[in-house]
Length: 373
Image (cartoon, rainbow, N blue to C red):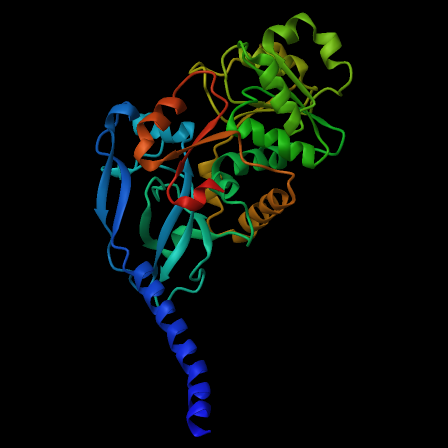
């Protein structure tokens, strides 16, 4: 009877040892990741020409650092402008592209306390360089996300989602039933404005450019929660019928500039605010004198990177914003912009698409298999 008893007693130990060895192998495999693939530019210029894929050796993780496996990262207009040398942020060259993205922590240094192994994280700085498969950085350069945040939403939360949140939060006291008007409504930030406003019970008048597929785009944006989707020409010709069921806007959001500002300002309530956060037309902001004198309109500018920089030590504001956005995403009230996924090796096509006129899809680089979720 002794032999069977010994055999039975050894089984738990064998299972335990096997599980431990599996953990060891997995842990070592993850921590020994030493090579990354990155999209690098060594000079400013056309992204389609100057961006190249390179293999990079990862440094050892020091006591204050973390190793991150990047999962997904979008291509934003600011990324394109930075590579072109036309953006205020000038990374030290050679540089890795990408202002934002989501990754998973693979390894942590001994003194790191703000993140742990397995956390999903986003960039906490504008110069991290998210277009790569892996990176090693100081732990202060990343911020953890609430558990269960959808990955593709997480990949776009720092730029477009946060921009939309602050535009709707910081300039006018918007209440349910109020109205906002915006141009470039099909952009990543524009789609986020529509959804966040809808989640808060705020109406949106959304102006897009004339295009062959206007009805498809109108249907898509209305599906996100847009109250009205129109073109500038439609609004000029049918202003009364289009505007009859919504109040005059308290806030105008301008990402185009040029003469497009006239359309926004004409609809805006007196003593309210137009905020410019982009200049897609590459023309100056044009404001009629009458809007300033007789309507007492406030004209403001906004740059999301400055907000991140100025609130770097004010973690409560950032934590509240990210938590609320992620909560809406988990509940289905907020979704990532319409998008197209690309493997990192297909980066040239992704850049080409991102620089094409009339595109609504956000081009997103998937940097590991989870980027498909």
